[in-house]
Image 1: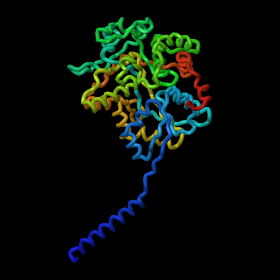
Image 2: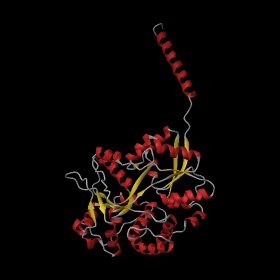
Image 3: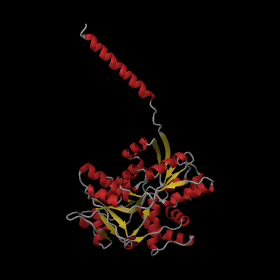
Length: 391
């Protein structure tokens, strides 16, 4: 009994210490987690990344996302939301103009940029190369196959306008039988920023590097361009999902996507399989356009989130790791040196873009909207907004 007494005392002492520590722990202040209600387009991928979610929770934020296309965000009500995050400037301008007209100016944040590109497959890229329509970008490592090509947009669009088909370009030499027309497929032009931006890019190239100057010219060009885009059939809501799927090659040989989506796919492939997906490659239009997604803060809490993702080094670094070209502290687009180093360190080819390509310009907002309405037979944004939330 005497031998057990010291052990009992020690155990009791330890138990008391645990109880005291537990009581002290309960009295520690708990971090308050604020839930941000957000409407987002494709850039929701960033906020749904597990590491981004973890970093946001550390700062006291949780983001609840309602996904829809950029133009859909502009068309519908967003009164109960803290932020909206369309994928490009046209939809953002529609939203900020409407807010200003209602007496509620909105604050915008531009944390990163991403060029519009065309995702395709090696056999199709090599077919375009042999036809003189595409060429590999420089910087291909010795012994490697190119992941990136420059696409001559004038020649590509003429091929589409002439009704040329893949079998006529010689796709069968690569073991593929495809009698469909040569064209790029987009997401729903009535909803998606990528589709509307591609429409603007096509109009710029088709108009000899000039934008339409008035509604009459915009309508005339839209009628011509509709023939180039409507042969794609029923558009999907998110073209990148089709592109990276196992059936993508047969469904959509060339898809209009964002550069960061392709790079994120290759980063994941390298991490999962130890090698890049050499079957999928990118076409960079010779008339380049870099989209500028804008997070629009509608409440003070939304403003805190926008400030955080724009200035926090860890969140900026994670955006770069997800394939985005991150803006610097002054708000200017970065030189992408960090992204190039990140890809090279992981044995992933980095795109080496030349400064010789034309920088495309989108039509004025009202003219671009007119073209979208004509090409996609879309309701005007003002009419869509009057109808309330979509089911």
